[in-house]
Amino acid sequence: MNTLITLATLQTTKPPNLWAFGVASAVGLSAIALVVLYLVRRYFQNARSAHKVEEPQAPRTQNPSAFMAASMQGVIQKLRDQEKELERLHRIEKERAEHTERLSEEVTRNMPAGLLVVNATGIISSANPAAEQALGIHGLGFRRYSESLGESSELTRLITECLAEGRIFRREQVEHAAPSGERRRLGVTISPIRKGNEKINGALCLLSDLTELAALQQQMQLKENLAALGELSAGIAHEFKNALATISGYAQMIRAEELAGEASDYADRILEQTRNITHVVTEFLKYARPLDIASEPVPLEAVVERVVSDVTEAKPGVRLRSDGVFGSVPGDEGLLRQALLNLVRNAAEACADAASGGQVLLRGELVRTEDAGLQRIAILDNGPGIEEAALGKLFRPFYTTKADGTGLGLAVVQKIIVQHGGHVEARNRPEGGAAFMVTLPLCGSAPEAVELKQKSIET
Image 1 (cartoon, rainbow, N blue to C red):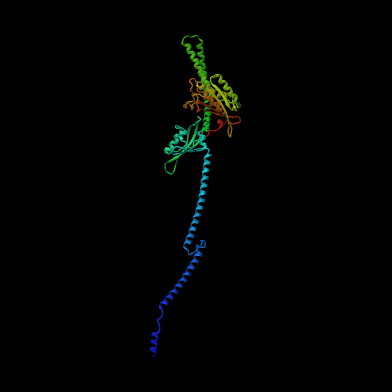
Image 2 (cartoon, rainbow, N blue to C red; image 1 turned 180 degrees about the horizontal axis):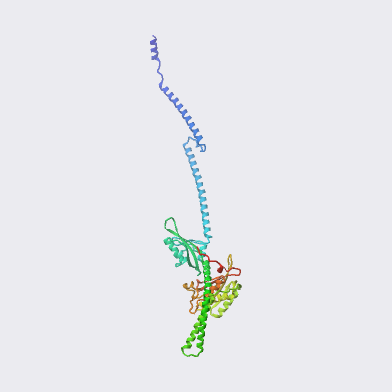
């Protein structure tokens, strides 16, 4: 009975709902998983915050557009900061470059040595004031070097070889003719400009004006030569004069006898030649023997006026005049007058046949330097000028361009001027004619040209 009741009960009872149970289990497990993920996420967020305190917290948002906008704003800000830093660095570099360029220009402009930079096309790209002064040419920049310096000049030849072959010239000495006609002695160092081992991009030329040093060397050498020559020539000249006196005496005795025909003519010729030789020996002694120079102040204005007056009387067809300033120089008035008289007479003779009439000008100028004062006297004429081949030989003893000259006049002039502590030079004038430049120390200035020790000429 019980068994039947149980079976009846089992048959009448409904089976359990398995689908509802599965759903409830799944919801519970999902909730547990979410809680675990939430806890894990919080854990990692806390750990990341602890290790990256310095970095700004990224915007926590669930909106992707806002997150991307915030990220782009951060990138743009970083780019702006970098741009400002680059601008600052660029400004610093630009200021540094400008400062370096200004310093380079100042150094080049104030260099005591001349600097020429010639590019590969032969154009002078840079020239400092010292170079223009040494060459006697202004406005050298952006001109062709061969035209500025002269097609046939030594300096042009050296620069051409440097540009063509890359040759280096160290401490060369060249003669340069300035546009004013003045001849200068220059020391030059020339080297090519290259970039690595590439072709030549130009030439760098350093210049030094050695004219004054060369003149001092020449004067010192001349003084030594004159001293040795004076000792040697004194005895020889004495013997010459004795022999000439004997020959002249015999010739006069022959002439005194009333001889007919060729004998009388021979006696006259002997007397004439002995007088000529005696004159040459006398002039040579003036040149060779040491001069006894006084140290009295000599007012040059009075000396110049007397020289102009004397030559005007001798050459009335030539117009002579003087202008400028003439000071006082220490020395011997008679010797200085002799030197100026010789130079002015030569100038008057050179321009006597000028088509427009001979003109000679004596121009005086006072030059003040740091150490001393100088008197410059220029003797200018409008004659035919001096041949180039003769310019370097004018002051040599026994060199003359005159048919009846002894070749000792200018040599004696040079000796007198040098013994007074000065120097004399000759040049051609650009407008035609010749110019003789005499420089003497003024009173109160030491005659350094004679007393200075010999210096080596270097670039």
